[in-house]
Structures are given as structure tokens and as C-alpha cells.
Length: 137
Image 1 (cartoon, rainbow, N blue to C red):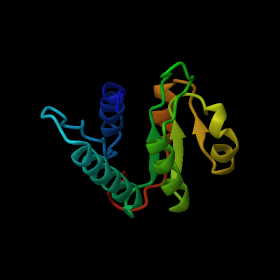
Image 2 (cartoon, rainbow, N blue to C red; image 1 turned 180 degrees about the vertical axis):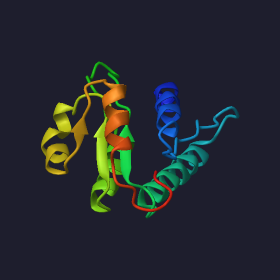
Image 3 (cartoon, rainbow, N blue to C red; image 1 turned 135 degrees about the horizontal axis):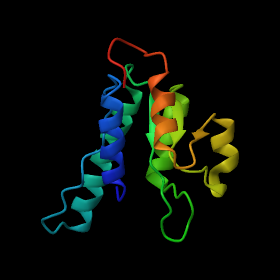
Image 4 (cartoon, rainbow, N blue to C red; image 1 turned 120 degrees about the horizontal axis):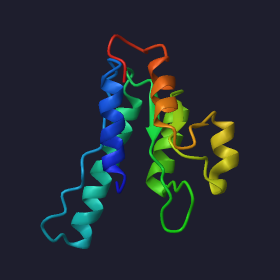
């Protein structure tokens, strides 16, 4: 979620190609939460993300994976789970940055495509996809 600005920028660019991206909303953690409440917020956010990925109108999952925690092209556990759902539902998987080495075997086997930081390349690839339905996402 630390890459929301980049996600919003990519979403704007995709909309210019008549693609209707779904961008995760920022977590509203303005009020202090108990550990149990935090778990529930994360659970519901994950369910919502998975539902968007599994929606029959969704054609691809675009992952914004900048360097983080000293790890190049970081993909965290939640994002990796979303990628797995996308693969299971036969969605295209695009990574803005490189494929992280710790998941390289799986992501290559699942057909993930890296754009090495090129927003232009990623937007072009998504725009060239055949939509799954009248509302391309």
C-alpha cells in the first residue's frame, strides 16, 4: 500500500485507454485499533482484493512492486497471495518492476511479465489485451 501514488498514476493512464482499473483504497487507520480489529480490517481488505481479481470482467493483475525493506522489486505476502489468485483464475500478471528473486520460479511458471519500471510498456501491454467482457479491467 506504500505505492498508492504510483498505482493512482497508472490507473489514470489506463483510463485514457478506456480500461477501468480497480485501485485498492488506502487503509483507514486514523483511529487506534485493537489487534483483533486490525486483523479484521486486513481480512476484509484481502477479501475485497480477491473478489476484484476473481471478477469475470478482470483481465489482468498489475503489481506495483518498488524496492522496499532493502529488497529489490519487493512483493509482500498479501501481494503474492493476490498473484496466486490471479494465476488460478487465468488472469494476466504484470509487474511494474522486476520479478523478485525469492518468487522467480513461481512467477515465471505462472507467466508473470516484468516491465522493469516502464510504465509506458506496462500500459501498452494492458491496453493491447483482449477484454474479457465489455468492461475491461
